[in-house]
Length: 167
Ligand code: SF4
Ligand code: SF4
Image (cartoon, rainbow, N blue to C red; front, top):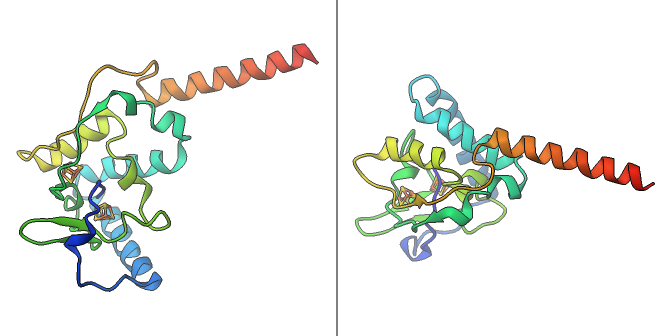
């Protein structure tokens, strides 16, 4: 899946995909990912990334971002784990995603990877011995998603109580 690959020069002669083509390819990817749940442990990592990158507020989803180092080297490996993503374009030297730069079409999980160490570890396991060069150093106040959600809930309740006391 995912990645920061957006070199349009790797797809110089391809016409833009139509809305219908993009929709059909997404349906195909979705079906293959669901099928992957039956034979690939990585599919669960994909599901985790999809669920959290779609549902979590940005301040929780991106809480590890300040501790993330490294850059995508555009190897394209993570776009070929459960299936070869039909949006991935590559030749001997370069890779590109045909929808990564479209804010409308890029899948949220592709933008958020790696959103925490577990996410990185999941992809790293799947592409080994190749290496995805991201690392994390340090950690946020609430490293786990559960902890961050509980803290958010506590803060929300405290704010409500403060408002009630003031009124
Ligand atoms: S949509 Fe683009 S970034 Fe996401 S997996 Fe496919 S090729 Fe990779
Ligand atoms: S595996 Fe890592 S370095 Fe390679 S394309 Fe994906 S995010 Fe980039």
